[in-house]
Length: 153
Image 1 (tube, rainbow, N blue to C red):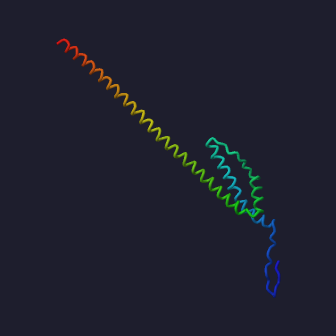
Image 2: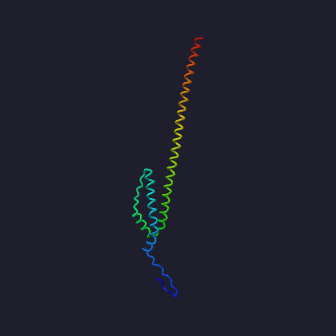
Image 3: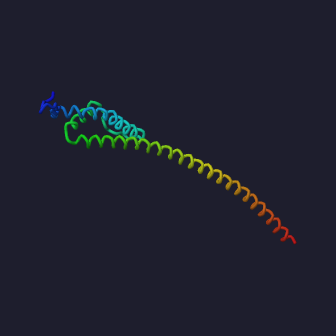
């Protein structure tokens, strides 16, 4: 509806009330709902993969109620920022876990190689010990023979 003032039409400002504000903000939160839900699910999967349990119920209706509650308050922008950051943290946590698993596999492979090298070195030492013990026995036998030969002279 418009008003006429001195022959110029001017648009009237829409009435701003809590219901209009809530409805205007709700679509912003609706697009955050899947990200927030996925973030909780990702965090839960990360915990479960490390044999820990994250006791968070990811009920989409409950999350929707939380968002609707905040959409009518002055803190909706803080919540929107927090949800975005939480989603980013959960995504980075998943990447970090993947990197840790890759690093773990690499370290396990390296430790395995070192273990095999150690076992081979130990086997080589044992073989050399047998050879040295055989040489020591041969030298001891020769010494006994020489000692016996000197005693007879």
